[in-house]
Amino acid sequence: MVAADTRRAARIDVAHPEEWISILMALGGAAGCVLFMWLAPGFSPQSHIAWAIPGWIAGAYLFLQILFLLVSATQVRTLGVLDTIVAILPVVAGLVMIAEWLLGHLSLSLFQLNALGLMISTSLGEFLLTVWIRFVLNRRTIAIDAT
Image 1: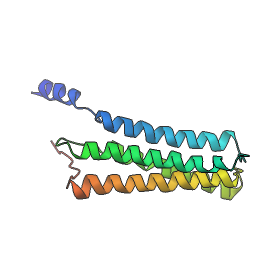
Image 2: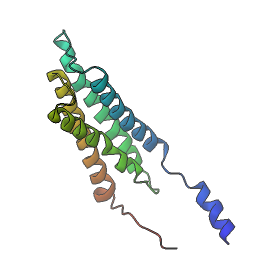
Image 3: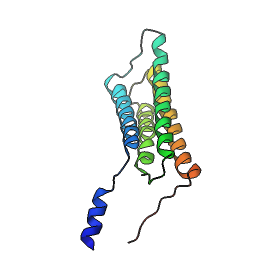
């Protein structure tokens, strides 16, 4: 009986393919922004059009995350909460970087503060949409099995 339960538990996936893409995008976005801020402190582009690049990246990121979220929401199967948990990671990373900037440990330019604000607002929007669609619209709940 225990062996049968062990084999069944081994086959359960942690996340589905579209959730993995969403998770990797959130982790990559957070890591890329943090590395950009720490490795190039005070960076400010010379071209005025470059100031729009973080906005376009944030818009594309949010579009793709919502697309993956809607694809996973239309399917009738169990959904993991790992995607929801990882979605808040860029917000936390951004808030830590703001705290470091306020303490004077990190020198940020106005361009970097703009990019940081976009990362925090975009990631917070994605997190709230994920929670809203998964748990409110689809009426999904988190259950803990005691057996």
